[in-house]
Image 1 (tube, rainbow, N blue to C red):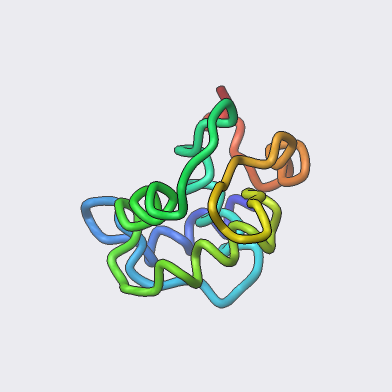
Image 2: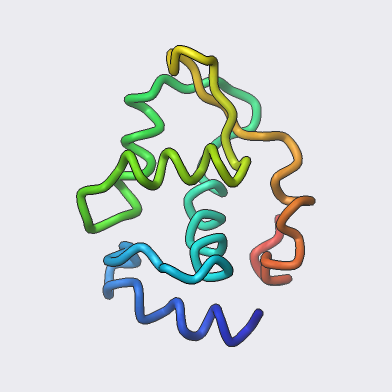
Length: 105
């Protein structure tokens, strides 16, 4: 995994903003983890609030892609109509092999 973290650095600008969405699944998951870590597991969010979290982490315009991927990779769950979003409770367990030891709480 360390090699993926090293390569992923090229996808971020000097401000820590993701400038390009990775095409390789492992790097994509690591990038999504960085965003998912900012979503509180103890609250529900509106789509607008989730979009703001994503917007504060990416330097490109495809917020919808990232939101959809957070849902598809099970970092987020939502109501069917999209009126509420929340963090999946066990995404850290699901992606434990991708999480660097120094980033765990």
